[in-house]
Amino acid sequence: MIASLRGILRASDAQSVILECAGVGYRVAVTARTLAALPPAGEEAFLYTHLSIRENLIELYGFRDTAELTCFKLLTSVSNVGGKIGLALLSDFTADQIALCIASGDAKTLTRASGVGSKLAQRIVLELKDKLGASGLSSDGAVLEAVGNATASGNTAEAITALVTLGFSQSEASLAVGRLDPCAPVEQLIKDALKSLAR
Image (tube, rainbow, N blue to C red; front, side, top):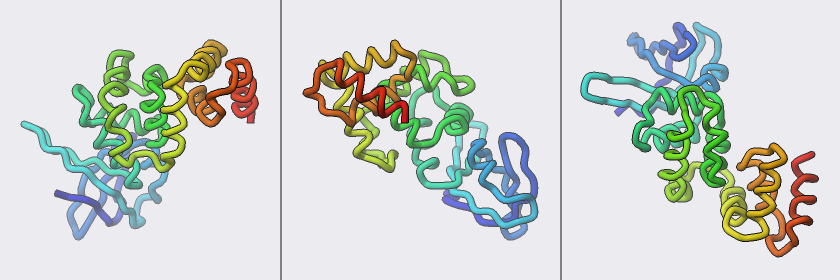
């Protein structure tokens, strides 16, 4: 398996680059975030890679860091999520943002990515919620724990619902409320969460 590539960046388009390594040019599909982080053509570049082999298709995917690579592998483990959808999600969101959406059950935010409908977003959240902790995906385990605590109990759940009604995303509301004292009254949780969201 090809785990990484280092070579001269020869060309790029909106979805892929050609990286020349020891005289061989590899076409590598990349996210928009990875593409933006690469140097101009003619300079040396490095990518972590994932090789996908299916019945009649061999594709190489490249990522700027291991968090993106881990998230891509996790996303493509979900049924009906292929490389194209994985790249679309990672082009619109960072790996930590995807982890936050999954932990808070925020499927709606994931539908902003091209090709991700509500049913697919719900499937991603449902299938990956239990795998999230073991994957090592999020760089901030405390954030995921706070979100998990916030979505689990009465007052915090009510406060999150109120914040979502006010227009905040499920993941933003869960993160803001998850950092507060779960024993506080709902009104206080909403007030304190609004202060932190205003920052």
